[in-house]
Length: 294
Image 1 (cartoon, helix red, strand yellow):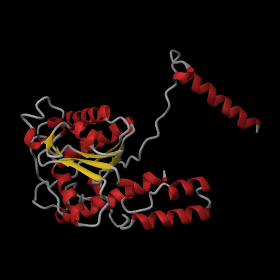
Image 2: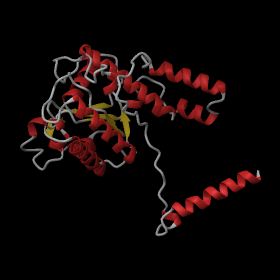
Image 3: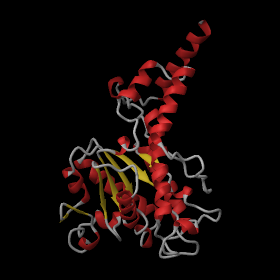
Image 4: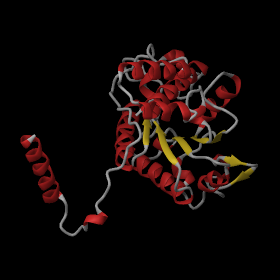
């Protein structure tokens, strides 16, 4: 007990030393509770363990964890009474923002059993980009690639502020940005867009979806699998710093050479088919599970 008390005292002293002297005690920075960060590994990830059913997985987790004593009654009741044990409850009151890849996922959700529900919205448009969305010419020069809400072209942050009861945003930009921007500038533009959105929607939880890999040999500006990998690492770091979630879909679509697997590509270029979107759906369920039980 004495040794324990000494250890606590030493830790307290260490914290005092490390704390800047100009900061008052009541103003100490509280370390944020980060959303789940799925790391970029640089290798293709297996899809075998991705869940078909989020509901079944959560039920098994609750039963096994409570029986084994890994979670207490409070945690058990928190998940059980939180309404999260369903296929799409985590994605209710959410919006997916992005380009043609997100448009494709929206179409998949309309025609397949998916994580989307009546309160899952999509603000996506073919050829859209973060750079266009934050530009002063977004509603004029770039009007033809800006997402539309209620038949109106407007800034994304304004559209989201009009969505009823939205509490989460899943954003996937970068594919079009990299055709004319470095990975660093691409990430800076995505962060600026998210900042603009949060300025009007401060309670929004942010989840960044990794930029998916593309066909081997494609090089258009900075758009290549190598640059996508670099950009995803930078995005992952930005999410860690800002307390945003990061969802690594890219490496579940990747072959050993870092390119998209042929069975997931629809045009031998950058776009994806329903086989790929089935993986999106499963990865999102896997992410939801980790976020719910954390």
